[in-house]
Image: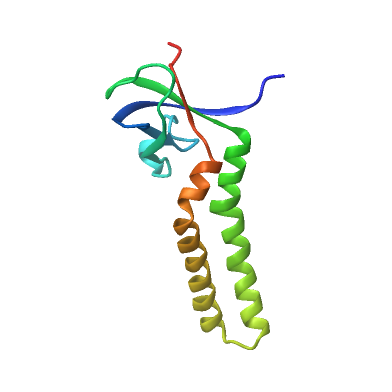
Length: 140
């Protein structure tokens, strides 16, 4: 049985010690649409992924595939979108129930959510060990 993966093509931007940096282009679902210039919703971003040096030689400028398992993707989505949404909405509800005004509840919830993201940032080395990317040679 084959495990599901998420793959992006990228270009190696840096090789330092035991770490490789790969620049990938992240596209929204509608970025290939013929009307993207008129609608303004399409989105393309360059993102840098850092991963361990693969078991084959790579150098700056090489085209590679960055691969992550579906479990890694689900953990990332949970940490970046689901949990912060629950924290934000839960904080608003808790503050409103505790008697805070709407403005105070909204501001308080934003501060609590910011603390969540700051904490997540502080533990980035822990999560980088949990969420692994691999580099593979692209198939043309």
